[in-house]
Structure formats: C-alpha cells, structure tokens
Image 1 (cartoon, helix red, strand yellow):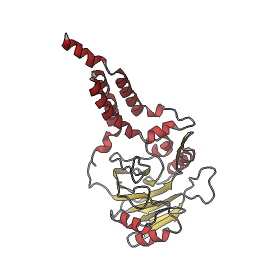
Image 2 (spheres, rainbow, N blue to C red):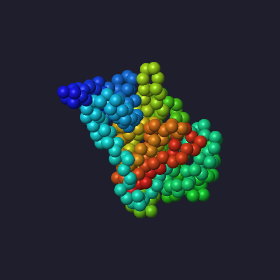
Image 3 (cartoon, rainbow, N blue to C red):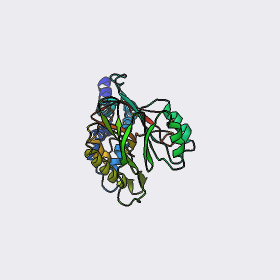
Image 4 (cartoon, rainbow, N blue to C red):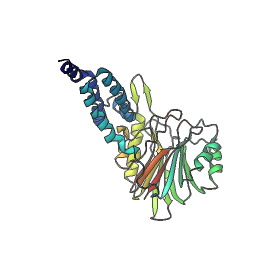
Length: 316
C-alpha cells in the first residue's frame, strides 16, 4: 500500500512544472508565432532564443525535488526542441581543412582607444578578408597602416571597410539607410573580390542600425527597415557567389533579419556569440554566404571594442 501511495505521489505531482516545460518547448519551436506588434517582443525573444535552454536544468532540479515523473517526462520536449534548433551548432566542422578562405568580421567601436592594437589582433588569424565597422576618420589611418603590409587591397565607404589579400574591383556604396537618417549616414558597401579560382565573389559589408530595449518594448524599426534594403540589394546581385559580413544588430533567429537570412546561407557550426564583449550573449555580427558554405564560425579574443571579432571558414 505504501509503495503504491509513493508511486502515485511521483506520478501525480508537478503539473505546473510540466506545463512550464511544454511552454518552453512551444516557444523554442513556435517562436515565429509570438506576436511582434508594437513592442517587437517576438524579435526580443528570438534574439536570446538559445538561452531558453537554461530552463531545462532548473526544471530538472525542481522536478527531482518535487519527485514528479510527469514533469521529468515533459522535460523531454524542451530538450528535443533545443537540440533540434541548436544542437547542430555544437558539432565540429565536417572537414576542418575543407575551406577556401577565412573571413573576419569586427565592429571595432568608434570609442576604441587602441585601433592599431585591434588591427594587430585581427592579423593573428591570417584571414583572407577583414571587414570592419564603426571606422572613424581619426582611427582609419591607424587601421590602414597596420593592415596595409599584408592587405594591399582595401575599400572604405563611410564607416565600413574591407581589407583583402586578393584584388578588389568596383567598390561602391550600398544604400541601406532607413528614412530619417542623415545624408552622411553611409554604412554599406559592395565590392568584387578576385579570388584565385572560380571567378569573382561579391562581398557586402554592412552595419545595420542599433536596437534599443525600453519601456515601450524592443525598438527595431530602423534596423528592420535597413535589413529590408540590404536584402533587396543582395537579391539584385548579379554574381552568383556572395559573402556578407557585418554588424547586423540581429541574430539569425530574429525575424527582423528575415529579408537577408532567406536569401543567404548561415553557419551551421558554432555559436560565436559576439556581443557584448564582456559577457557575450548573442551573435549580432554575421558572416553569411550565397553559393558558398560557412563551414565554421567562431569568436576571437576581445579587443578594445564592445564587440568580439568573429571569424569564419568559407568553402566555395
């Protein structure tokens, strides 16, 4: 009798914990169904979506303390949902040696007190391409001087720039400015990189507007408008092979970046959280491709910026 009573306690408890587990699984799988509305709360959820996985160990401990079989069984749902959405990012690259170029992307910060040191830090990975954002007129000469010996080809438009070991051609601005920004707001460029094999590659460097979290919600209006303009530019690109590097102020899960993400391929190996540098919780710096594969993406050590640099191996 006592054994039966104990089994009933294990099986009958924890309905609230089970409901929470089901809700977490639902958010992981059906996050696109969360309304964005005026507060952009759907985008806010998607920005930090992988971190919902932290609820699993918490719920596990509570379920064990509660001695609830129902809650433990329900925990399988968020575990499966998280692994389905993000488990692949934990896997190593299929063939670490199978890549054609390493690209580095970094928002160097317009308040960076050591631009030359930041440039030297990026050189350690010997990438073929380096994209920088928040280049100020005062700091640009320091970056140019540090990078020029190994990267003789470069182009700068406004506050974004590209340095390359391979020849560049046709560098020009890309208008990604939302309504309301000034005429001097230049944060997009497009150039052609003459790779040793396979013909030219169109490379875009972009810095989308920042987002703000305030009493009225998640302010993404300008970012979303700029993402739509960038997506249209990529869609109109005549070259097949495209690489996009930039601070997009958005994760690839955030629906605000959909105009870009649905036209590009993203990395399926590595989380590479890049912001904020002191305790990175999201990858808002992106390296994407078309007609190419990002075989791995990872974060580099901190520089004088509030972002971490990220690097990617690209196979054409």
